[in-house]
Amino acid sequence: MIIKFTINKQKISSNTVYFAFEKEMKFNSPDHDKILKQIISNKEFEAGAGEVFSYPLMDGKKLERLILVGLGEKENFTQHTLGKAIGNLVKSLEKKKITQIDLDWPEGAASKYKNREQIMAMLVKYFNLANYKFIAYQSKGKEASFIKEINFINLPASDKLKKVIAEMEVIGQAINYTRDLVNHPSNKITPQYFADEAADLAKKHKNLEVKILSQTEMIKQGMGGLLGVSAGSQHKPQFIILEYLNGKKGAKPKVFVGKTITFDSGGISLKPGDNMDEMKMDMAGGGSVLGAFKAICELGLKVNVIGLIPACENMPSGKAYKPGDILLAANHKTIEVLNTDAEGRIILADALSYAQKYKPEFVIDLATLTGACLVALGTLRAGLFGNNQALINQIDKAGIEIDELVWPMPLDNEYSDLIKSKIADVRNIATTRYGGAITGAAFLKEFVNYPWSHLDIAGVAWSDGSKSWLNHGSSGFGVNLILKLLK
Ligand code: BES
Ligand code: MG
Ligand code: ZN
Image (cartoon, rainbow, N blue to C red; front, side):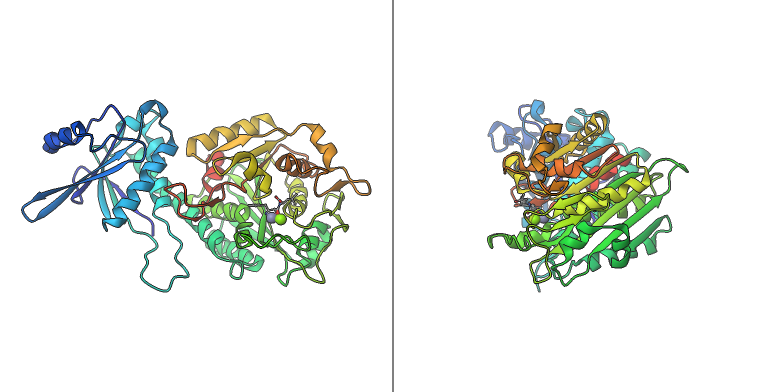
C-alpha cells in the first residue's frame, strides 16, 4: 500500500520526527526545547548517519513521542544518507507499531539541493521503498506495508510540492510493482505472464499499444537468438513491444530494452546449485521497463517511447541449444555459442537489432548481464557502457539526482577483438574471463547502429538486505532512472 503524504500546519499524530545533522542540531520544537537540549548535552543522540532516537513524553495519560533521526555530517550528505536514515526510521516505527507520523521538514537537507522539490521527491521515494515487503507467500500474520500516513510540518504547502508528491507516488507504486514482478518466482512469472501484464496495461491506457510477436513472426523477423535460447524450455518465448507515442508527431522515439530471462539455469552449461534460486531475478531489466511504462502511462508523459522486452527461460533439455551451436540474429550476424549461460546477450542481440526499425533518438538496454559486473562494482552502482558520450553523461547525471547510481565503464574497440569467432561473426563469450562485464557489452555493440547505452544491473537489481531502505529481494532499480531520463 502506498503512503498518504500531506502538507499541513496541523499535526495528525502524537509522533513527531525531526531530522538533524551531526554537530548542528537545531530543532523546530519550542515546546520541547529544554528536553531536546538535555538529550543533546547527554549525548543520547548525536545525529550520526542513520541514527534513530525515540523519546517518549508522558503527560498524564497521553503519550507523545519525539523521534530524532541523524543525517551525519552535512558535508558528506547525499541522497543515500537520507535513504539510510529513512530505512532505519521505518524499521523503528514498525517495531513501535506507529503508522502515522508528523515530519518536521528537513530544510537543512533541502538547502543542499537546487530546490525543495528534489528532496521531497527523494523523501517520498525512500519512504515508499522502505515500506515495501514481499509477503505474498506467507500465509498469516504479516503486513506488506506498515506506515499509512506522513504529514509534513513546518513546510509551506505549494502546488509544486504537491505535484512532486503526486508524481512520486505514481513512480513509487511502479517501482514496487516491478519489485513484485522480480520477487515472484519463475513458476508464476513466465514469459506468457509478462506478455499478459503488458497487454493488460495497454487495455487500461489508450496511448499505449502492445504487440506480442508469435513464434511464426519471430521466425519471419529472423530472431534466431531468442528462438535459440528459449528452445530448451517448456515455455514459449515472447517478444513484447510497447509503443507509447504521446509526444511530438514524428519526433524520434527513445527506446528501452529489458533483458527478460524468467529463469536462468544456465542451460546445458548448467549453473552450480548454490544460489541458483536467485536466477528468478534474471528478468529485472524487463521488469523495470514494464514498471516504467506503467508510470509513463499513468503520468501521461508527453513523449515518444518504445519498450522492447525479449522474454524467455533458459533451460537444459533434449531440445535446448548447445555449446558449439551457431545462431543467426535478426541483423543477420552469426553467433557462435560457446557457453549457453551467456544467454542474455543473445536475446538482446535480436532486440537491439529490432530497435533499428524505429530510427531511435537513442536506445538504452537494462540487463542483469554478468556476474563480472558484480565483481567490478559490487551492489552500489550499475555498470554503464555506450557508444555516445552525451548519452552516457546524461544517464550518469540522472542516476545521481535520483540515487540510482551508475559508473561509466570503458568500451574501446580493442575489446571487440576478444569476442571474434573463428567460424562465425561473433562468439558469445570472450576468449578470457577477465573484463567479463566489458566483453558482454562489446558483444551487444555488434548489434547497434544508433546512440546506445547498456546498463549492467546484475549487482544493483537485487538487495541482500544490507541497505536499510530496501528489504531483501528486488530493488526496482531502473524504473525511476528511465522516468528521469524522459523528463
Ligand atoms: N544472469 C547471469 C548474470 C548474473 C549473475 C546476474 C549474477 C545476476 C547475478 C548471466 O546470464 C550469466 O550467467 N552470465 C555469465 C556469463 C559468462 C558465462 C560469460 C556469468 O556472469 O557468469
Ligand atoms: Mg546466464
Ligand atoms: Zn542470465
